Image 1 (tube, rainbow, N blue to C red):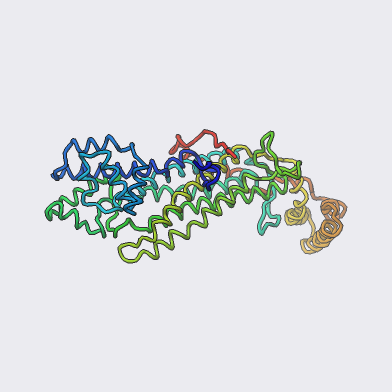
Image 2: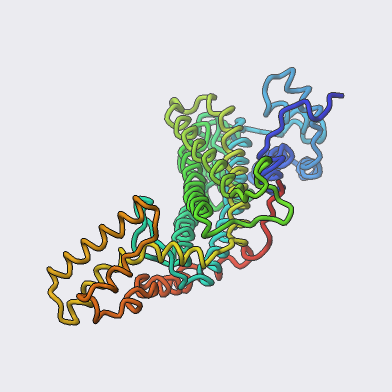
Length: 477
């Protein structure tokens, strides 16, 4: 037997995603779902009068999870058809029902209805992980709601904000993603028993031309597999537009996570914030002192992969000629599971990071202090005018002092001495520069915006999804 280490293993399963998401996309879950669909079809057909006995259905139900994968493999090697391989293996396991398995159905009855079932469950798992990250970011935002820090536009110092308000920006991106996930979950429907090209011709023949029975069959099957409705019209498959829409949602989550993780990497560079760093963690094999933001970097790496996958369903949708072509199959086997596995991994990391962010207020204050005098010049000007000064003359003095202070910083590597220059200028003698330069005066409503965001946006989400809160997102490797 070959050593297990001499074959490629998917790192999304062995390193990054959760066991629960891996199990969802496993062969066992997929093919057990196929069998449940065959049971649902047989039950519905029996209830509508086809000669399918209770004993046959009971035998099918008894062997739903008991799959002989070796037998399936042998059948597929001979038949070159995966669905028929499973039909034959299921028939061997339930011989009394062998003759009625898959009656009237095409392969996409099991493949596509199973995929929609798995998509729905996987989306619900992603939804809960998104909620958990929003919850952790909101806790962090509340704790640092009023800690002033430099804001940045164009990656250049700009009007101050607070650490908590910035975390709300990260959380709100996920709130918008959550709304998209909820919409897609609500819109998912079953494919139902639509037949080979979506016309239900085979079922119409089974029921001797009784259109109403075919309609009832579709409703019954949908109910039995947990859906209220099916897609109004299909070709052989459910509309591949659905895959494109779902991957758009996952890409959106990945985009949000990538943006936040990039911000954290920059803040780690500035030594203002750090992600969790464990006691025996090694940052660099060469530079022992380093505390690299490896979790945020991994978020970006995996998120980039998810974003890249969005193009495949779009291309598949656009090339599904007429009622369907089979060039979707191999692509979907790769893209759908891996997109969910990678998104799951991204959110595990994101929750872990958000739960253990380390803040360095003194460095944040030092960086703010170095830039704040320039940003405060308008307030200083207004205060000096209010004290009786000439606005135009004062503006010119501030301009000259600012340029001189900037030259010291940029050309000499010195500290920003604008405040000292203004203190020594008699034109500003009546201005309380310390009061004007209080950082809290420059953050506007940032602390109140944090409070309002949590109360009006986050708390309703927490109330809606209480089971998604709490728990630990452990990073295994």
